[in-house]
Image (cartoon, rainbow, N blue to C red; front, side, top):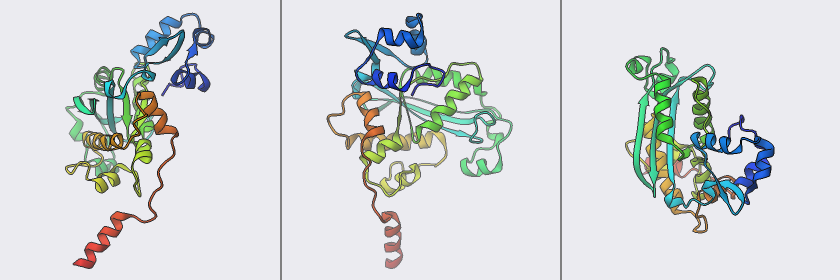
Length: 270
């Protein structure tokens, strides 16, 4: 995922993930300070690699088992980044499907409305001793590094975090991203694909507290492992995986909800 502030067109982004982009074409869009821009992008989580004279996303050559993925979830006190803020963030970093590190924190906030508290269980009082948003995002950025950013419905978490970073003076995120919801739609047959439904159907994380950041992260991690087991063996690199999650055909959903049917059976037995 490239931020809107980066002046690459969609065609160039596609080439970076597939057949590569010539240096002169990159210069046409980014100017003569190309090497400086590429270093800047690297500091924002995006590595560009030169291969046989062309430029590619480094993830084009990165095997899935060698990659670091960062599964992320945030809770916020509203959906609009210009008016609201992150109140909790959770993340685990995984490599070869094993958790190698984790980060979580509440975020100090003066106000959380009752509806959000009812959903998350987080009140403003709970965050009174938590670090402020600037401290949390600086630590999260350091934790994330250049890992592939994963979330369930990734656009919301990615864009909210990236925009929040810009509000405190940090550059936007440029990490490659992967949506676990899209991946699940192409690897798992399910009546619904919300995280709560998938957790209930597959018993991903029995101790889950839905709408708490780290709980949703662990649930997504368990889902990710199931998705990867169902993946075609021809998908070997991170870019293969990203492309598959976005463009492959989605699996057909069942017409009836099996969880609803199971509940009815239980009632009839009783």
